[in-house]
Length: 295
Ligand SMILES: [Zn+2]
Image (cartoon, rainbow, N blue to C red; front, side, top):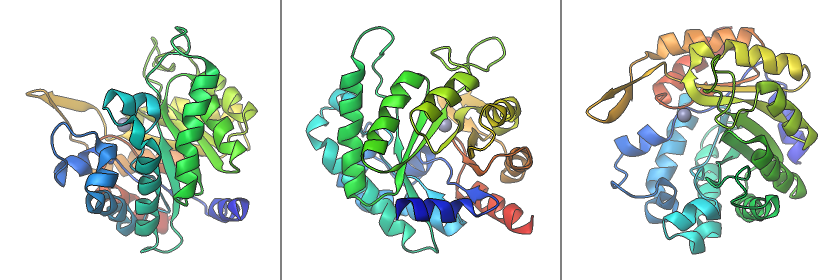
């Protein structure tokens, strides 16, 4: 069933993902200081509204409001005892939103733990157990798989992929390349090639990159991942150009049209999954829907 749905999704020429969630939450009234993932319990209608805005914009795949819902992150907010509940509800809310569209698939967002394997702050086993707990709850909520996103340590991402695979789920790995002289390394120093190898060895179903830079800067990463994994679907979710900080508030000024130009160029270069990260909204995804349909 999992494989059948995934295979059907891959028969599309291009699979349209969703856009940013953070700004949508703020725009629609997330209380200041609240951990966004707590919204799944405290204000589920808001979570569902953001998910539905991407279904309505034409996404083939939407994610979930569970990026920061692993035990390590939730502990910092005093919410560790709600880990399973936040993930299960997050999955259910996106599934409910997806059901209002046609053939919309839900992959759950799984973010970094924020603790450093490299520095010996935790063991791989502890990271694995944390991801297993999170992904077990996401599976109960009905999602097809997970996207291990905004990742910077391949060894951490591998633990999440292993947990997803133990549970018979789809796993996508997406890293942020915004460091190094050529901006082709993650914060932890990993290259696109290292990411592809680690992800595929662990059994990932797709690999890619999100966040960090504007969509127009993703060409090299896309090409190198394609070359390192010629038969693996490539996942690309760039930001809406360069951020502008005014009075401590970060905003993005790229238009949906300019973003779509950059995104469609990546599709031409072999990206299978395309969507947006920070600064992108349902308007950006709707513009991409028009471009993909007209292709
Ligand atoms: Zn982002």
